[in-house]
Length: 251
Image 1 (cartoon, helix red, strand yellow):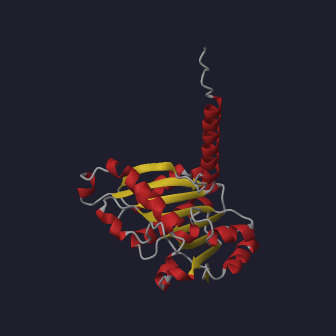
Image 2 (cartoon, helix red, strand yellow):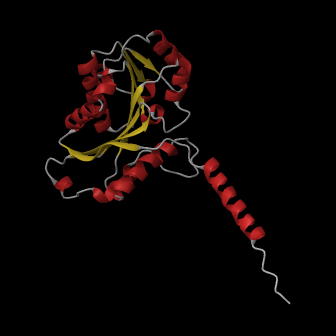
Image 3 (tube, helix red, strand yellow):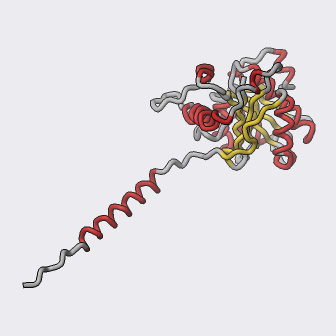
């Protein structure tokens, strides 16, 4: 009596369905958040002026094509405020003086700092998104700059003042968001925002982008160079959106 051959078709069909289902789950649950792509690779700069010159060189065309900018930095980081001022000045060298400079009230800048930024308006952006959007709308043909906190300027956080103003004003700025680059594991204690899976503040997407970027390239850092006197400024810049840039700067 001839043995009946095993029928593997049902098993193969089941495996096929499992593979298709797994692929579907991966497709629909994949992280759809913006991905960071290098624009300026990890580099050693003499100082902030040297870093800003590199940013201008890398984005010369983009800067000259735009009238509307946002610059966000991490409050209480003096070197980031200095970088913000220098970046504003560099943009003005190319495009002319800004007509409108909106400074976020939450930054709590001194009168001297406001003067250094040539502020024309102060607005608490988080609470007054509509006011800021209307001001930007009526000055659409003018050169406009918004200076705020990085968590409010970055596109890595989907619902923040920049996103809400963009939706109301129907205008997308060229946005620079500055963050701290921890060159060592020990330096991570100086990070302002924490990468927390149970985050209730909404800042984790920004914080995690910074720390993950730092950890992924930290092995490339030449620590001997950082011992030089004066110590070079460690920095890099990534593209995080169509007109969005994340700038990381060391201590």
